[in-house]
Image (cartoon, rainbow, N blue to C red; front, side):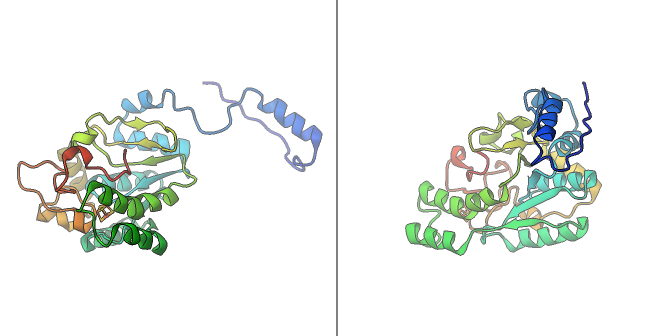
Length: 264
Ligand code: SF4
């Protein structure tokens, strides 16, 4: 790979036509902007999860952030990214419907890792508009009502969280259910959707558990009560043995609708 270093005094470049022309000449043929993602997926596939994260942080920090729901996967990735770069960014969305155990877990992890989580939540106006259009807590009345709630409480805050980012990191895995079986390590940007790194896409839950234990990461205590995927309090329940990891999420819906819009 060819590496070019350009030295130029930028004093008064904004006003100085000669300096501008010189800068244009120096930069001829140099790509400015986000790194090409053409071969990124191929490169990332051959790396370990930590090396995948390191590569993306090197390319994109500070325009990359982990979306953390305090699932086992997200906590493991948070631990990995903070070990690589203590300044790495992590954001979380408080839908105002989270179980108290999740908020306690967030607090425990912040203390454990000495990190600051960037929190986003719906505005009063967004919640008022939701209640006005759909009524209070109507998420089980229809898929439309549930998606309207997810939109107001998750997607609107998410749009603010990812503003200015080039890429976000997720804890998605193929083994998490029917809607995620074709997941890859890297999802390129498409339309309004930001590019995603899914560093654990090919990990099993057993591998996640073993790594969490090895690193002594504090996890959500709801896992001890039979929860295998944890979202908002009214839309999550524990699962029985033999049920799928995400069967406790929106359990009254069919498995093919079990996404909130964050990862579609
Ligand atoms: S998971 Fe349930 S409570 Fe949370 S935003 Fe979606 S519908 Fe609303």
